[in-house]
Amino acid sequence: MSFNDSSAAANSNEETGSGGSSGTSSSSADRKKEKTRVNRTSLILWHTHQNDAAAVRKLLLEDSNLVHATDYDNRTPLHVASLHGWIDVAKCLLEYGADVNSQDRWKNTPLADAEGAKKQSMIDLLKSYGGLSFGQNGSHFEPTPVLPPLPNKCDWEIDPSELDFSASSVIGKGSFGEILKAFWRGTPVAVKRILPALSDDRLVIQDFRHEVKLLVKLRHPNIVQFLGAVTDRRPLMLITEYLRGGDLHQFLKEKGSLSPSTAINFALDIARGVAYLHNEPNVIIHRDLKPRNVLLVNSNADHLKVGDFGLSKLIKVQNSNDVYKMTGETGSYRYMAPEVFKHRKYDKKVDVFSFAMILYEMLEGDPPLANYEPYEAAKFVAEGHRPTFRAKGYTPELRDLTEQCWAADVNKRPPFLEILKKLEKIKDNLSQDHHWHIFTQ
Image 1 (cartoon, one colour):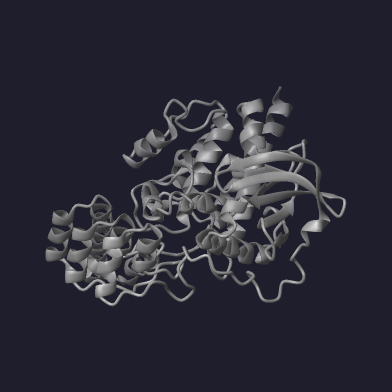
Image 2 (cartoon, helix red, strand yellow; image 1 turned 90 degrees about the vertical axis):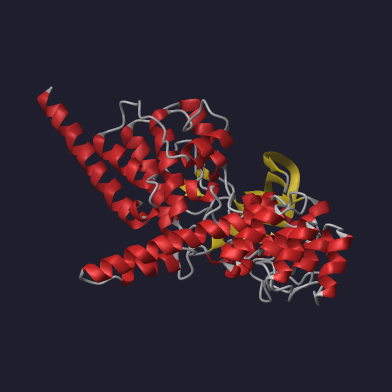
């Protein structure tokens, strides 16, 4: 999850055109210009990643400003080249005035990446251009102590001795570590425990700090409740409420397709949770909304909560220190918005797309495009295709809402507050139809 509203500039362009044909023409030209810019940004990052110096030079000849292009993690082409040790590409970028000390989201410079990847020739090249070995917070490869996430944390810092793992059970695993059911002061809780080997990795620690800072502020009936964290000792641990009902993925696997009324109630809970995230002063984008990250409070399945903030990010940045390879692909492929798969800049509307895929799965009983592997499914969707409606439970209103939410044009996807209104109206209509059928039988 991330604080991000990367389409703000594009949206402001679209809103500046006022009445009259000249305003419309200007707005259209601005949109076209913005689309071209985003495409070129994606291209130079891609060609840099592919070590294609000739293609990079060609793009820079056409537009030298592309040397300062950044992805959503503020990583420049020089960061990418430095991480992989692509000397010819780096020389080309430096020749066109690349900022040798630009800092990414983790405050790391290209030289920090080169050092971490042990690319000696690249290290020498960057130093010859005045490159510094780390940014504001030091290189994320440097094993120096990290300050606790928040200075005033007495209310939520948990002493590990208070956690009882004697009857613990694993309820989730990932390359970051594992999620266990344990007990804290006699209460069952879910504990996300980071692998000891990763607990000293600066990149993992910084993402852990980000997640803790985020969760401390969240209070909503449809968001999994944060209870505390262990940050002073190793392993790092994050403690949340334990929800006995399991996740929506397992529930759907066992139950199959849901009735329209149940699916709508589930959708309302999910939408309420995400609407809250999207309407914070700083918009929070989940970026990995999927059935596994939607939890059922109890076995009655009468209340759902959205959870798992930051785990996908922790998993991805952990991958061989190769951050760029994950650029634009934050989240799970099967539920991924096409703009994310295409490495385009994106905003909170990616969560709306994922919500549509979850709604589809609840009504159909199968994951969207179940006959495709996850990556192929994302690619198929990015090419403009969508899952086929088959379930009888798909009323025309639900179908319309799903199609709006997974629209290729992000501006046509409704915000969650609007989605809530539409779902409430559909729910009312279903209820009225049900009563009418009772009286006419």
